[in-house]
Image (cartoon, rainbow, N blue to C red; front, side):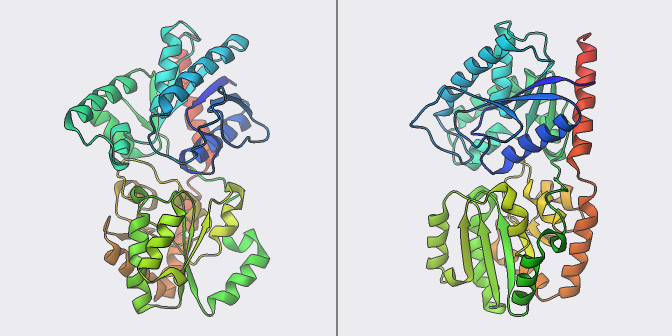
Length: 394
C-alpha cells in the first residue's frame, strides 16, 4: 500500500554528505515502491530532480553546509516548523518520517498543536545527540551534559517508532533510553556504486597504468577529527617511511586547508591530493582511482555510510576497530586501533605489501555489498509504516 510521507530533514539537504545520502536514498527507494514523498528542509542545499523539496524561509547569512551542532539551528528549526505547518495545510500525510533529533522534536510540535495529529511519527537517527555534540567539542560542563541527556531521552520518547542507521545505535537507545529501536542500516545504490571495472573503462586503463608505479589510498567523507582524518594524516609519515610509492587521495570537506597544512607540517604534502567537496554522482569514479579505501572514524555511535560505497566498488578496506565498522564489514575488513596513527599505518602497509590479501578482501567486499540494497531497506521501513498505521486504526 502506498503512503503520502512527509520527510522532515532539519539540515541543508542535499549537500553531498553522510546523513543526506541516507535521506536521499531512502526517499528514492520508498518512491520506487509507489510512495509519495515530500521533503521539508532548510533554505539551502542542492535540489534533486524528481523530488518534491520544500524549503524554509531563506536566511541569507546562513550558508553552512557541513555537519555539526550550531546555535543557528535554533531559529532554523523554528522556521522549518512553520514550513511544515504550511505544507500540512495543503496536503494530508499518512506518515511523518522525522530525520535527526531536531526532526523528531518538530514532528512532536506539529502533533502538540494538533497539526497532522493522526499521522504516526517514525524517528530516523544516526546515533546519540549527546555523544555527537561531545565529539564536536560541546557539553564539557557536566551539568549541561546531564540536561542534554534528559532532553535527548525526552525527544526519543516523542516518536511512535524509532529506526537507526546501525545496530549499535539501536542497542544504545534501548539501553540508555529504554525505548524500542529497530536497526535499518544504510544501504548502497547498486546501479551507481558498482565494481570499479564496470564503472569507467577509460579511468580503469589510466588506473591500471598508474598501478605499475604507485598505489593510491582513498578516503571520501567529511574532513574533521571525529571522522578520523587527523589519524589518517598522521599515519602518512609512517606509511611512506616503509612504502614511498603511494598517494593519498583525500576527498571531502570542510577544513581542507587545515589538513593540507597539517600534511605540509608533517612533510608529506607531496604524497597527498585534496580534492575538496565531491559531487555524489561523481563519487564512484573517484573512489575507483584507489587501491585501498580507509575510514578511521572515532565516533562509536554514528553510522559510517561511506563503507557501503567502498565495498560496492570492490575496494579492500582499512578501518578503525569500532562497533559500527565491525557490524558492516565483519571479517571482510582490516581493523586498526581507534585513534592510533601508527597502528593505522601498519594495517595500510600490510595490505600494500600483500596483493593476494588485497584481492581477497576486494572480492569479499563485493560479495558483502550484495546484502546491502536500499530496496531491502525500503521494504523494512514500509513494514514499520504498516504496523504503525495498523495500531492507529488507519
